[in-house]
Length: 284
Image 1: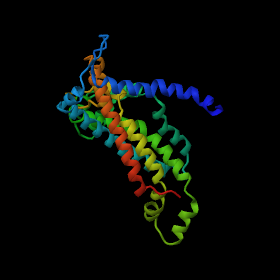
Image 2: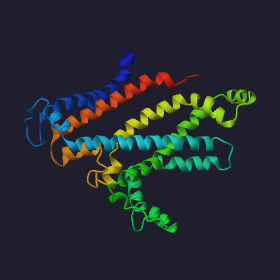
Image 3: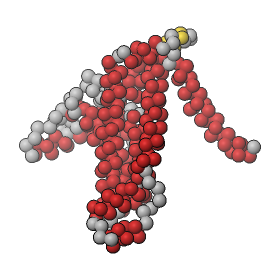
Image 4: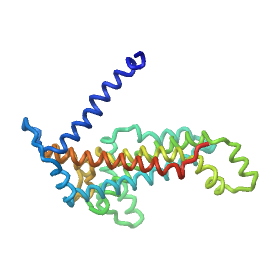
């Protein structure tokens, strides 16, 4: 009873704002409701049938996974590279760690406004630099080809510091004597990294893959500020599509069905990653 009393405030919050909300969303996905009517009409699986037969929905699925895979992969690669570099005894390494991590603690709305200017085709920093070397920069956020890569670039800049810090923590947990023993046995730097460092960092990589992928699949803020799902649905992702269906077109039931599909996708992907982790994640 004592433990239950201490847990009850958190259980109450979870019960109301997580489990009840999830249950209500499941119920709502089988109804037709426009937020204004007092009655919710039960329509069975009609929302799901409409969803899976809609080409725009499949474009949203493609866009979301394109964004998630691209941003997570690049964030982990650059985060690991920066962690390896700043794990060395370099001057000012504390300053550079703070500098690289600082975008992660900045609000997405402010960052998005900054990157709108950076990606401006006429006055933006990127196209200005490209012009100095004779390259004509694209119309980033208004191009169906370049709008999604632009969002990925912004997200990598925002999250790479977080990945770096987590990798630094993982590197600090690796015993130095393992590296020293490998060096004594004649292993070079690449062999030590490939056969000692990477396997011992696998739990850290697994944690980052799972959490970063969940976050990327739920992206909303940067899309809402920078592109609003455009141009021509080129950057329309799950959460923005849900928001649009619910609060622009007042299709609450359909939006709830899409949200439920997103939840199932994230749950399934997480379960698959946990199952596959037994093959490549190594604990000391």
